[in-house]
Length: 295
Image (cartoon, rainbow, N blue to C red; front, top):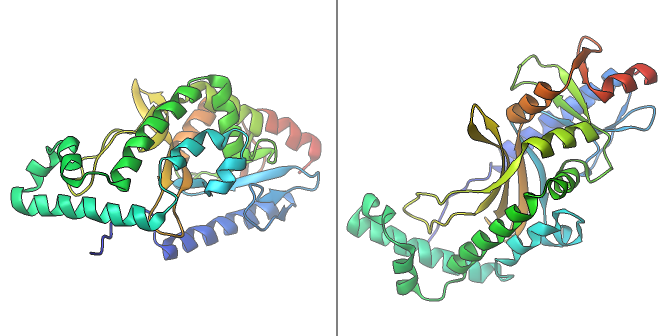
């Protein structure tokens, strides 16, 4: 049985996004008289004074996609290791039991319809299938995500977590965002690492994702760790942390996504702008640095 419920972008789309990102890095580097740094590190551009910049563009940023080994060696992101440990090291076993579970759900849909399948209790599925690595992984992940959120309720731990996610702790000095989402003016907006972390850690709070309503799947809450802020008294996601398990190559990996528009909303709402040049706006502490460095 072939199950194709791809949620990740195709390799073609991913390649286009990467090429687009590199283009923006080159433009920004030229604007400040810096150099593009090739590779997979956090730094995209370095200026003549040796300061490091991470350049972001587009609607949704993939901040990182880390393997089990990488997460295990992280200082603060290591709290996500328990989420990966929820899954069997044996991908083929996970895949086989996933197929069993979804086959059962799809057969149930044919017999009883989609609406009735949505109401089918998870306990009934477990009673029929018995021990199942796919089901057990989802249940264990739900508990692990709760523990992660409990840790991130501590603002100090949240700040450290974000510092390693966005800046590899202290590798990067400045966050640069080409604004095509919030004010949509196409300008490069530059923020300091410390002020960005202060604002994000102050306004964000962790939450677990709700259970899905996909009748073909085994739906459990807590499959993602969310970081949210309040917008007009309603919670709004900025960060989604999920476990990627869609192939043998991408198995037990952590993907950390952030939304450009919401990140810019928080940063711009809390920092004063300075139109440094036709294409660059600096914020907060960055303005003094740019003036002194004569970038």
